[in-house]
Image (cartoon, rainbow, N blue to C red):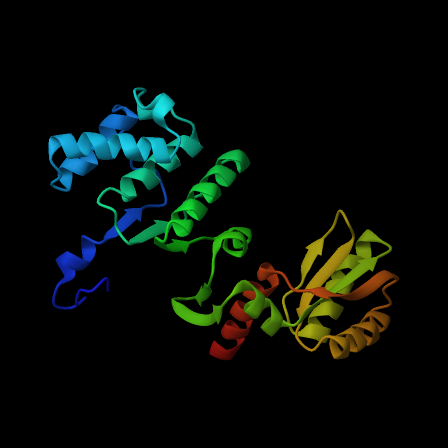
Length: 253
């Protein structure tokens, strides 16, 4: 990795990797500048270079205006940007981000997405773990789906969606028919359906498209469900994940 043998030279490998954990690790009592300066010093950087590096990173992550404030006064998005800045001390070619937007409000999440996108645009390899599939869809060049510690699929977002096929969508007339519609959708597709009770809609991944649609019509008729609308749409990453993980569990049973 990065030119070093992982087994024989693990310390040298680690020195080329930046890391930002799931939760902010900045010192709340130190200022933004002091946090970055401290990280640089811990990495063995000289005083003058550490000051310049801290200033450069604060500017890069749009934190110059708050550089002198204690990090504990920062918003969630600002603290996350400071975490990312700290991960870049030493200019590592690989940065590992563990669920970087967990617990953030929508505005801070978008702010973090922008910062991560800038890292990739600058040529830095970013390995990001996330529980938000929208995040993976938006940010990742390639996605790996892991279930119970095992890789069950890998590819681009478009490749994974195409492999999953279509999405069965059923809208029903009455609230009490939703459970019956969900059973019918499951029998027709073999996938775990999602139920939107407010919209009276049931959706499920349908790998074989039109054939699943035909089976769904038969199953819905058998359940005596009054259907307002039924059709196929393209799968989302949520459908891909649910389909892959439920299949893996069935095969393991």
